[in-house]
Each structure stands twice: as C-alpha cells, then as structure tokens.
Image (cartoon, rainbow, N blue to C red):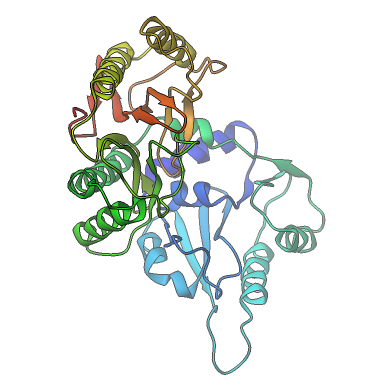
Length: 377
C-alpha cells in the first residue's frame, strides 16, 4: 500500500540529508500511507486532530485515532511502516484524545536514535505537537519541509491511477442522475440529493461528494453549494462534481437544462464543448501548463467570450485541486502520469452559464479521458 510513494519521499529526504521528519498535512498522510479517514462531516470529536507520520531511517510510523481504525488498517502490513493508534472514544473517563495522541507521539520520538536536522511540515503540525517534538528530541534543528511532497505527487503511481479511475466512475453515475433530475420545479438541493444518493449506493458506503450545483440565474453562477433555488423553464444548471474514493478525488463538470435549451444556450454549449476538445488536443508530455492556459483563453476570446474568470484546469489526486495548475503563471512542464482537469466555461451573471470539464490521464503520446459521461447537450 503506497510503497512507491514512500520510496519517492525517502529518496527526496535522503538527497537533502534528512534522516528524521514529521509529516502532518492530511494530504501528505494519505499520499504516504493510503490512510483516508471519512471527513465529509468534519473531524470526529474523538480525534486529537489529523493523523501524523514520523519518518526515521527509512521507516514510516503512522499515528492515528482508534476511531479511524478501519481507515488505518490499510497500512498495517507494509514492510517499511508501523501503525500506532491512540484512544479517542471513552466512557470510563473523560475524552482525552489530545493527551492520548501527545503521549503516542512522545513515545515514538523517545525511541529516536537519529541526529541532525528534523524535517517538519509546519503547515499541519499543531503548537502542542511541535512543543512535544522539541521536548522529546531536546530542541533539535528544525527544517521546514512544507510543500516538499507536492512535486512528487504530480506523477501518479499505478496504484493511485486505479483509485482515481474509480472516483471518476462514481462521478459519472452522479451526472446521469443529475441530468434526469434537472426539471422545472426541482431545486438545486433536490438535484444534488438525488445524485449524492446514487453515488453512495454505487460506492456501497458513505464517501465524500463535493463541489458545485448552481442554477444560471444566480448572480454568482460560476460555482457554489446547492441551495433552495428552484429551476425554471429554460434555466441552465452547472453541476461540478467530485467523488472521493479511498482518499482520491475525481473532478468534472457538466451543464444541464431544465427544458429545451434556448438557441443561445445551444450555441454557447456547443462552443464550450469545442473549447474543451481543443484544450484536450493540446495536452501531451513536454508542453507547459501556462501555454495550454494561454491557448485556451485565446480560443474563447476568438469565439467572443473574452471574460474568463476561472482557471483553465488543475491537477487532482489526494486533493481536489493540486499541481499542476493550468493557469497563466505556472510554467510546469506536463509529464506522462499526471492526472489533470480541463474546464473551459462562460458565464452571464444572473442569466445563464456553461462549464464542461473532463479528467485526463497524460500518456506518453497524448491523453486518456477518464470522464465518460457525455459532454453534449
């Protein structure tokens, strides 16, 4: 489970002379271990916080709450790792999750025999955990390693691609249900409830489902959570949908219509579909992210849609939005094995909008489209 990810991290740390490190960002934890707790309703009150990973001498120790034991068990049998759980829920005494996690971390650190720099993800570690680290290791020299794993996460492993494929399959189920539910009188939240239920049923368990469901007459109709706005005859509905399978996010977008779309909506939809196909045709190893962005923006401008208040695309993996971002500033060179989204769109605030988005696995000579639900009207 995630052996290749840990090998990449181990090589990077060794290159920098770092023999010990504390990883604390949830995305890093999932990428390193496969540990992906259910978080749709927020953190459990019986957890001290996100899990931690202590790295020393090539070995990775995952520290997680007992209340997430099912999620943590995926990591129990790896050759280069150890799983340590702490008590979260209790009835015989008050909840002491923070103290229990602090104790578990302290015990791990006391076993440390390393010397020199200690890498720490400062953007995820709490003040209490940082204090425990300093006390247990006698004020070591700290090296912030925030962002070190992000470049490694861009090119997916075979194991990650399997998880991502399933995420996109689940999202496609949602689009089919959303299209059928998009009728006059239905509210945004009604459409979302239908698609969410279908995805959970297909997944066979609760999974996070996120992003946008917005009717065209909203003033800010680029995106937003589904509310009680009712669909009227002629309304457009943007459904930007992510399903999260084993910690890995899909993403995509389709635009539906409550009744027969107007001639302007048909023209707009066909143009955005053409823009998406044009954008996909640009993708191959060796091209720069910002070159793709510039060419897609120019395509939209030539079609009369100069206002484009959005990114052209982004990467996806253990986060719903990660590198490489397809935006004007980003000169990252695309590589085979990256999974990205492309999402051209056009919007008239308070009237209508259209966005179409596909997920792409970059291959040696082009792309494989991971989104299978049709982008046509």
